[in-house]
Amino acid sequence: MDKTELWDRYNRYLCNNVEIGLSLDISRMMFPDDFFERMEPAMQRAFSAMKELEAGAVANPDEGRMVGHYWLRNAPLAPADEMRAEIEAAVKQVLTFAGDIHTGRIRAANGETFTHLLVIGIGGSALGPQFVADALSTPDDRMKPLFLDNTDPDGMDRVFAELGADISRTLTIVISKSGSTKETRNGMLEAQAAYRRAGLDFARHTVAVTGDNSELDKLARTEVWLQRFPMWDWVGGRTSVTSSVGLLPAALQGIDVLALLDGARACDEITRSPDTLQNPAALMALMWHHATNGRGEKDMVMLPYKDRLLLFSRYLQQLIMESIGKELDLDGKVVSQGLTVYGNKGSTDQHAYVQQLREGVANFFVTFIEVLQDRQGPSMMVEDGITSGDFLFGFFQGTRTALYENGRESMTITVDVVNARTIGTLVALFERTVGLYAGLVGINAYHQPGVEAGKKAAGVVISLQKEVVELMKKQQDEMTAEDVAANLGRPVEVEAIYAILRHLAANPDRGVEIIGQGAPQKIKFRIK
Image (cartoon, rainbow, N blue to C red):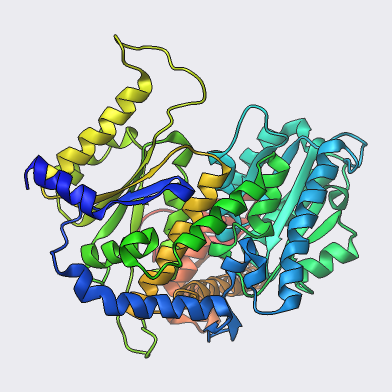
């Protein structure tokens, strides 16, 4: 296709949404001329399913609950008066609390004003808040956010070391819907210990975002934490960034959360339109279907040409892969659906993996994000009449062209500027694309049985470790992993037992010593 034909195709298929400052260009996706006509019946069914979802249909039969993250930015849509009131009250609570922290009406235990923010969560309770915090940070932030988003002890030590003496001026947010998520619980316990070492009362520095009457809710009430914010069972973690999960840390940082909500709400409105060619979420869902044959046969590479959007691909990995990666369809048939997401940022990607994207295995399609505004204020010239931003734009256009010339598909999302409203718009755009794509391929985007299976399997390992340590304390003898497995009557678990012993021996404080070298089956262990 020559450049004139490509220009015609660009004009024909460009979805330009001035109201939200966003456009979607699908001209470099090589769908056939009859594609939209063939897919329209399925697309209309997906629209109907989304409409039922927003009306309050039980969309997660595994847990018997509704899915209502769209109500978070448009409370009147919620199907019950009580829900509408709770949503509005939560936003007001977030804004009031953030104001009280910023003005010093609520202070740290030693009377100092809070200047730092420690967010403890995992998955959707961290990825969304991290993305928003990084994308919208400024030198004038009211509070500096840090995150404990894993159960890695060394990672936690790094965060506490960065806080240093500022821990006395740090407000901690513990985020867990159930209150029983092990990674979050571990981070909370480590934080409690860090505050204790600094001679501080953890409760006087901490708030909870959790479900009503959860384990965490009960703990926060018992210990009289500063405040508790709601999480509802109809909001999944990966779609919780416009709830208290994302709004509270953002408001404390100093971000305009009302603008973020407004951007999401405006995008929701536009993407409710049943006019497929004017609906950017519908178009993206159809492009996913086209590029992957509706089966996830290709990966999606996210390439935002803006440093502030670096973490967007990490956020989208959970939103998309946890939602789309399903073994069964809605009829219980094995379909093994999925859509793998990875990404970097432009123009860093051109020094990383664009070589393979252009000339290697063609197992992907690209989603570029272009931001029209280079920076706030004027730019210096790095060459005659050319700024750094011009080079970034040139690299984006060059990469897009180079990929297309070699038969690699891409689409481009263009936004005017990165601000709170834009971030809300992008979040809503991909949330709705996920929902519509799930409708196209007939899967449930709102449950995650694989995640629960992983949690259960981890619990089995922890239980086995306790058995291993108890046995070795009792025997007080040098033992191989096979010896331990035989004594426990668990011979089939010998590899897991060896891994447990090796892990314990690598950490001197655990009291397990490794004896000898060589093949795993010959290495012995003992309790010191």
